[in-house]
Image 1 (cartoon, helix red, strand yellow):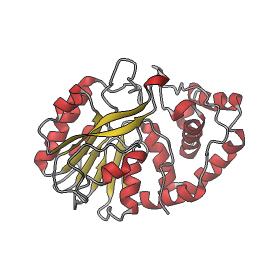
Image 2 (image 1 turned 180 degrees about the vertical axis):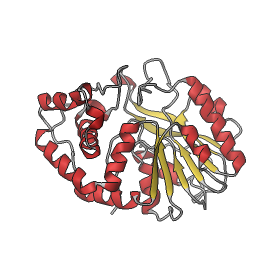
Image 3 (image 1 turned 90 degrees about the horizontal axis):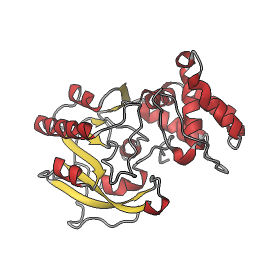
Length: 295
C-alpha cells in the first residue's frame, strides 16, 4: 500500500510528488534528505523500490526526529499511545493540557513514545497543522477545532516503520550531509522557503528560525555536493534571492504549487515555486515549459 506521511508539515511535498519524481536522477546510490519534514519524497522513493542502498534522513528539529525514531523502533507502543489520545480530539481543554507538558519540569525525561505521541496528537489537532515554538522552545500553536482529525492510522504507521528500518536518522544542521554524502548519492533539499513577502514568512520550525544567511550557506553546501559528484535537487520559493543563489544549474525552473500558509487568507492559493537540479539525466524528462499543474 502507498505510505502517507504520518505527520503534517508546513510546506510538505505530498502534492508536488509528480513534479519531483519526474526530475529524479536516472540512477543513484544512497538517498539523503536533510530537511525531513513529512518525508513525502522518501516514502515515495521507498514505494518505488529506489532505496536499495538505504537512506540518511535528518532534521534540525529534534522533536520531529524523535517521532520518526518512535515509528521506526516502537510502532506498536506508539499506536497504543495515540489510541489513548484519540477520544479527546475535539476537547479543547485536553489539547491545551497536553500542549502544556513542555512547560512542566522533567518533560525531556518522559519516555520517547509518550513525547512522540504528544507531537503527533498536537500536529493533527492544532491550527493548520503548524509546528511553531516560542522563544522558550515551547510549542505554542493554538487549538485547530477540527471535526474528525486522523490521529492514528495503524496500518500506515506499521508500513512507515517497515521502510524506516533501512534508514539512518540524525538530528542536526543541513550541513551534516557533507559528512556522509558520497559520489553518485542523491540529496534532496526542502528548506524553509525564502519568504515571498513580509507577511508570508514562516520559518519557525525550530527556535532558531531560518534566515537569509542560512539560505546562502545552503547554496554553498549545494555546490560542494555537486563538486563531490552527488545528484542534488532543491525546492524553494520563486523569489529573486532563491533564483540568484542557484543560477547556472542545469535545471532551474518554475512550477505551480498550492500555498496554504499565510496570515492573509486572500493570499493563499497557487503560486510559483522553484525547483533546482544539479543534473540533466532524469527518470522521466519534464516538459521544457514550466509546469502549470494545480497541486
